[in-house]
Length: 408
Picture 1: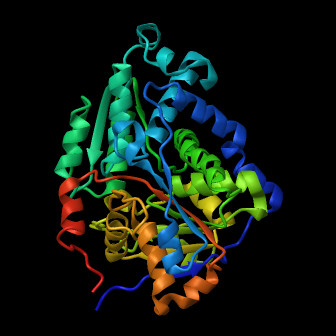
Picture 2: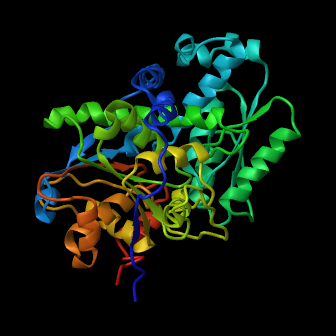
Picture 3: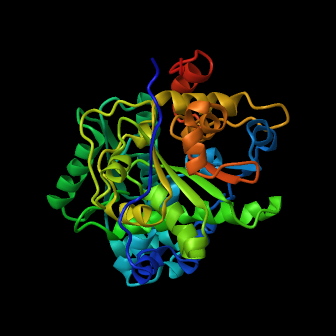
């Protein structure tokens, strides 16, 4: 018997309106402009496509589906570099006593800047995509990167990180323990800094910068919707590991629209559903998930939330969903073999889970209540983010060609 999708409508205690405004102020439109201007200064910057899946939308009873395809991002096949690169740039700007607007990419990677700063080691934990983005940026800075990967990580992803010159290893720890390893290294080594997208007490500034970097993706998508005559989406589905991406996307729309923003659904792997567990508990406190978390959705295998992201999500999001691996696998196949007339999209395990969930909600009567809770109907204009392509081609083929993780 297949595992079921679980969900919790957000009934968590909320902050005051003023507190909510302050909570998302660091994700304001002005801050998003700084992030996108920095990314535009990187050679070969090009906004990733927003694809309209008109025929799929019509087929399953929606007014529109618009999918942001991050497999094109800087040739790295995933969105994560947006956060890591921007946070590293802001860190360097801070060390130099400058604003990020004074440190475009060419100045950031210049010999003059490196001479002024000296040697810096950037340390992180990752399942693959974030670490590759940090290693890619450190390589261009001519600085050192150390990357810790959790047990079960893909060898292909490890080699991609090493190809950027990083000192990378797959450990016998889970993701959250790898984060602690990165933190311990920095505490015992001078001239080093943790670049991590999860925030904890005392480590909140760099994760906030990473979230600002992710705003480039949300900002691009928001502008691109206008090409389809959509002023704003009615719905956003966004995947969550620690919740930095989800918090950034939710925060971006909350900062823009306040209470008039889209209905946002946060989607996690059922093996690492710390945000969902917090929503079920209902007391406003975040929860953690332990263990190996050996989910197909490696990028979402995080059991301890970003505390900043959690505060944003609990105040603004509509629902939290715990999704089994078959949901992501089915989303990969739906996008790989599209309804006739739609563009084929190569979406990886963590990238496709929202597509798989949306398809299941709209086609399976078992989830009629979830469909009603989210107010999904023929007028809905739904924004999705495919956060990665086939970052592990072998897994991608196993799922799409061989039927791995079938829902039956």
